Every structure is written in structure tokens, then in C-alpha cells.
Length: 160
Image (cartoon, one colour):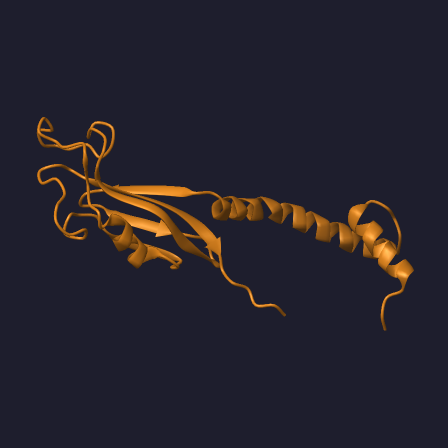
């Protein structure tokens, strides 16, 4: 049995104007409970949307582990990666060694392909940050860091 035009119109009015009394009291109470549950779930959903729509950046210092993760039903899309040093160590990943000879202009060219291979299209990934992971040390004696920028892209959904 297909719904009549007046039934569809009634459903539509009820969705957009939930306080309009169109039926039996117990139906209205059930509908109000449904709306209440939907609105209570909205903050969780908005946090989920925020997580998948934003660009994210994570970093880890030499000898630390870098973790990248996305919410369920999404996967990592790498935007950029940098391993080396561009700023003095007092601003990022401080060194306990003498930093007077520290290089602030070094980068491993292998950072993007390495991070892409490890993390692209995964729900999460993690690895140790050290120069051995990225090939030849771009600046020996300098404490380095890895910075990764990524998005969480929604997974593919099958049509019903």
C-alpha cells in the first residue's frame, strides 16, 4: 500500500514542525523522543564531521613515535610530510645537546613518499621517527622532527 498524498504531506509537516499535534498522543510522544535522541546525538556527529572535514597536523621528535588516525569509516589522505629541521630547537623538539652548530635548513626528501607508503588510505598508522627511517641523515648532529598534515576522507559506501 503506497501512502496517500495527504499522508506524505502530514509526515512532512510533522518533520518540520514537530510540535504540531497531528495524531494520537502516544505517537506524538514517540516522535518527540525520536527528535530528542536525534538532537542529543548531533554533538557527536558534528564532532565527527569536524574531524573529517578539517586538515590535521601531527608531529613527533626524533626517537619518538608518530601516530596518525582517523575516525571509523574514514581513511588517511596525506597532504604533506616534512622530516628535518626548519626552526631552532627551542621552538620545536628541544635538544639537550649544544645547539650552536644545529642546522635549521635541512630536510629529508624521502619524507613524503615514506609517510605516503605507510599511511595513505589506512585508518591509522604509526612509526618510529629517526633518520634511519628516512634514509641518509640530512643533517647529522641536529635533532630533527617529523610533521605530517592529513585529512580523513570518508570511505566508499555501497548503494542499497
